[in-house]
Length: 502
Image 1 (tube, helix red, strand yellow):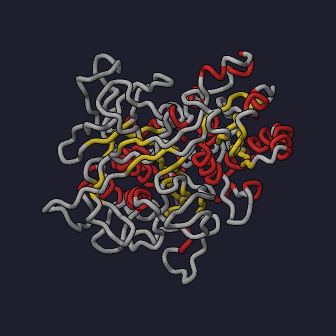
Image 2: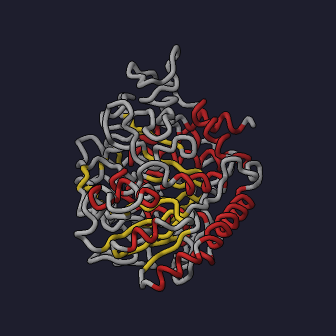
Image 3: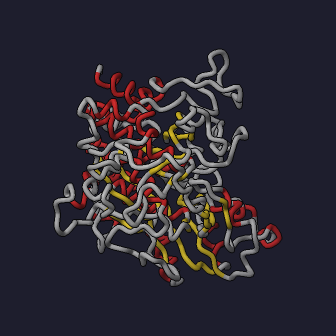
């Protein structure tokens, strides 16, 4: 998987999959259901493979009947609809997997089943089924997170970093709005929950007052097994095995009550899901986190027992899933549509593929109409970061990103109670600024809670316009939006001002 979107390089480790020669032995009727990610290498030499089975029947929310309902009602109705579709169509194929002693994990957030160590000879049987739409690879791919840039002279603890100030967040704080009543979420490498700047905002610690924190409904670990991991597997207590998740969470809500105000919405609460094993992730772990966010459940329970009333308001996603990992086109679209229908804002990083046009090429950022995509600019000079991906989306052709936010040498929290040592760059760092901004906006104007389209309209229309000579197709005339900055720089002060007038 294309894990974190801090500056990094991709290393693909042993993706196991189909050769075109082997496929030619079988009829086209089932070949067409085998995704390209399963055709890139020779599956039969590996004997077994991990796959994601995408079922034919998918709940559709393109014309959501819940658009104007409250977020709580939306969440309940969407979850019920998803479960009805999934569990009404999965029973027969699950019996087949059980008979064949194949380990699996079923999902309802999109109608899919992750199957592990599937014998190669079973793939034709599975793909030939009328209730199966597609099979894709579900490998673990590694994105290497670099060592963070060490703090340059002149950078240190300050009441609020200039990256935060530049978005207008401190002006919003002056109105007494800091994100109260809103829950942000991150699916990432985990979080150091008791970091001095995060413990008070963790929903499981009751503002840091609980002697014994309650992690039920507030933390989920989608990494259930592996060879070794400093955090372990299936953990009941939040843990970060690769620093990145603690850094992104800090930019959303971090505040130690002193000089380290590193987050956009220090009054909001947070929950989290670990979707990577020391930077290794796969499509199924992303889906599992999205599913848990829609209806959180306790450790030891199943997703059938999830509670939609405990769902967060906004999810930050500083990761990307490329075609080589199985995210070949629109595989994640069903779950993203469901999240939007449930009134949960999905903020995604545009990617670090660089300055070429059409470099927004990894899911979920490629689904520009159901996510809010964020590019990175340098808040010190306002210019786009050289690594920030440009639109249009290679999947739907949409303008992207929606806006840009600070993403160059950003100071935030890191495991070990640290701050200043962690000057990181990437669209990974930009996305959390927007997730925190949504918390401020919805806290300021509760009428907007769960109203995704109206929220996007306000955030884009109030962005500080930034034109670019590199339109990449973009718009003519005023050149707003364009495929470099979208509608411009995030300006949450103007967005809140607009929202308060509603």
